[in-house]
Length: 212
Picture 1: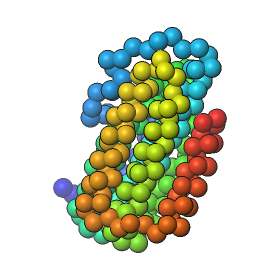
Picture 2: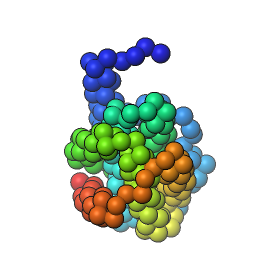
Picture 3: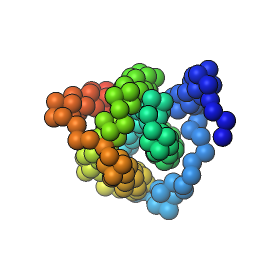
Picture 4: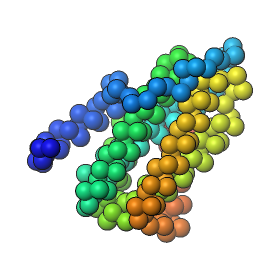
């Protein structure tokens, strides 16, 4: 495989960012888990509730793409870099599934996705620069927090929205797998203040993306 020089890497990252934020997600590897489910009719308030929750999850996947790309860029070990790239590819499925569900609910993606992407990319690159052990620990803690958000959203989804539920259930399984792999590869347990800061930043994003 040809080694990418600095210019190649910048162009590749820019292309990935534009595709993630503004364009259609790249081709997914797996079938949308919602394809075999049929919804009960949703009221207008239920539709808005489901759309807001799926918009939050889509923004979370935009951030996940940026985090993994940033970490892969600054990872020290090749196997860690490959692991980050692989995780980003799997998260891309989530990105496509949540975007499709938002469209089905006649709603829109977060207008602040460029902000979520740029901020998350910088955080991911910083985490990678601190060392692979801390970078992997950051992945594990991020995924654990995402799982808690997904569990909350599964409780808040309208009962009849089986399609959104199927997507979130599969996402929850995948995030747990990513956390496990990160820890098995040597991820460190992050200090408590860092975990609290991550949770506070996540709260800002999830609250804002629900509406905007």
